[in-house]
Length: 159
Length: 255
Image 1 (cartoon, rainbow over the protein chains, first blue to last red):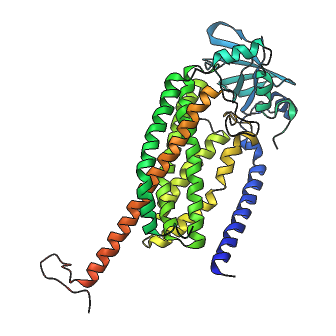
Image 2 (image 1 turned 135 degrees about the horizontal axis):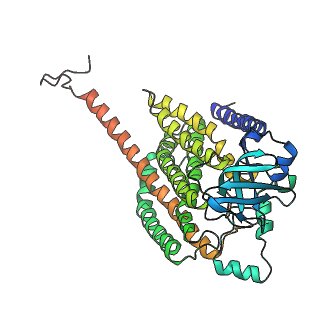
Image 3 (image 1 turned 180 degrees about the horizontal axis):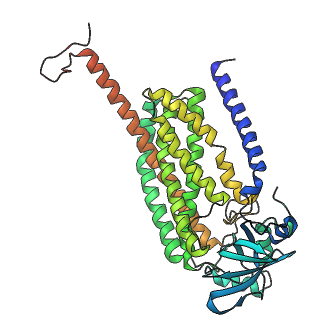
């Protein structure tokens, strides 16, 4: 084999092996790479009360209750399971019903005590008029989109 | 390939292309910024804050594009030993590092009002930070050897190894649940972004790409010329007696 060809095969085989190694490593560490658990996963895993975790999903419609002193109660849903959340503090601007959120905190007696709430937004970008028109014509797939987007809603695991 | 790998030919072609890339960069970025900042509608969810997208998204594309370009050049340099490929990789690295830093900074500025955080150790954000370190590592490694060819070889291997990170960045938002939302433009089922916002975004993307080639050509040309000057000096030194001590007494290098 000519040196050039040898170097080419060497680089190609090296890259293939490296890719395989990276894929194995990443799938082994999947648990720790995942940024948040869905409510279904939280129920399945019966996470210990000591562990800090993040729960992500949609803010259930009509679940937001505001009390005095900035205390907020709401429920995070993945359309299969629901996790009730208690949080005190300032919520991000995007926080609203039907919106994707990630809450970080501890689960105690079935209630998730969050000390941080982050908002997620989906990958749809459009002017407000278009969004209104879509809602009016009934083609609004915001919820469905958001569900698909969050991937492992309803227990489905990432490929 | 081999025809263009000739430095003199590269000087000729790039010399002719330079003003065109410069002009198209200015025009495209000006048009993209004007349309994006003044004419495009606010987003239904994010309002006016969405406008940082017109800088953040193209810089992030460029961060990955530059790295792919760097790794490609490194591979050609390693396999076919073209000196021009090494120059190309060296020239692309700092541009890519700047784009990556900008992507991280603008993303952080966007993350605070929208997500409610400057930074989270989410798969997308972390893998882009790793990309930034790969650029820095490449630049440091190339310059860490006294013998430039050894430095370039070590750097090229690092660049190739680090290329594994590029698909991880791209698909991180699909493989794992992340704070960062999935792709809006380059996705299987077509863009999920309204045309009025997509056009300025693409203009900025193309403008940043021509900017990359503009600066990349300038940097490669500078390196070629610097190499010629070095070679010229070396010949002069070998030919003429040199005043090494600086005291007016010339010492011949020969004999």
